[in-house]
Length: 135
Length: 110
Image 1 (cartoon, one colour):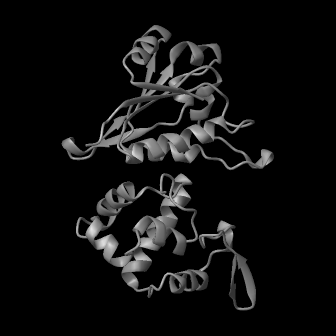
Image 2: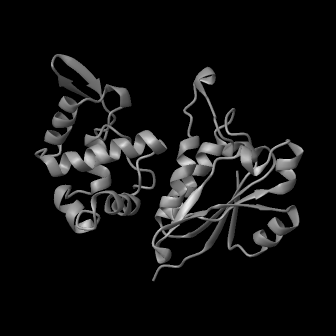
């Protein structure tokens, strides 16, 4: 019998400059392929990972930001972004990619995946997980 | 490792996946299919082309479960099921079709 655990992947770093963001995304996709209950959180500079309009030509790294749009296909629809981190960087939800998932039970209706949560709400969410991984 | 096509040498990794994605063309796909003992027909091309489009859009080769669902949505339920896809690619649609499409091995595929 397989056991489903609640995983929360916490992303704290800017998307490029280190490999953490991309590695995290790969681990997330692997976890989801094994049908675990996966949620993502973006805090601190990690919020930049979801920023719209990324262009990596000048730094010679692969622009993996389009991959976040595939998360819905992997049934990952709990993406939490910390409100305080956005505000500290002068960002709003409008500056982030619009990520959606399709609800099979409602004739594939598109629904938003990203939820902006306060730091206190995020702490509660962490409390509910079986596994929290920080990148 | 490498494969030879029209006098050109194309580099592959130890499992036969292309090292440089942009090396890919249809002749190389035919050659890669041959190394998997598969004949490329319309049905197989459809899956291979679908994977290339998916990669173009999302920058990843999808896991089999995701591929199956996405094909079902785009090409219909009669094609979006494991039976159909495993008949076309008996050693795994993810593994074999991605290789022929010139993509990396799917993330989460071990």
